[in-house]
Length: 123
Image (tube, rainbow, N blue to C red; front, side, top):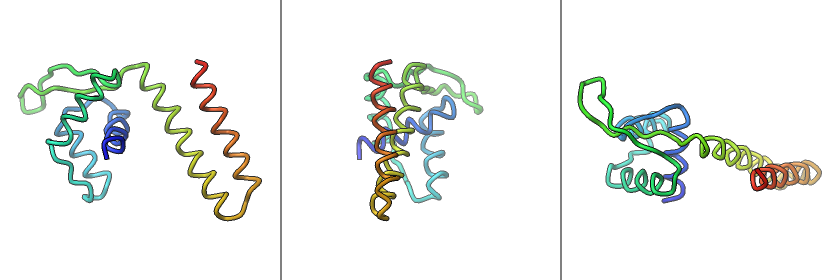
């Protein structure tokens, strides 16, 4: 779940900086109230992402005039995340084509994924 939680957090932060409670609320709303994330899982994941250079944090005032740590994607990682999402989406298209018997389309999508990954590696 760690990798999945990290990707969900990063996806949420793509829309802009947020404090922990805002991330929890966004994930809850986006999942149709299915995902009930506890702070005991969120903050360790945010700290890991910060140590790995994916997010930065600053203390800011909330709407209710309280101090809260606000998290945002780093500029370099924002670009990298877009590449990861593109490759992920193409991977699902490749699998769908493969399992429906459209091998030509599966091959096309697989080659597109390789192109995205190699391009990201070279840049």
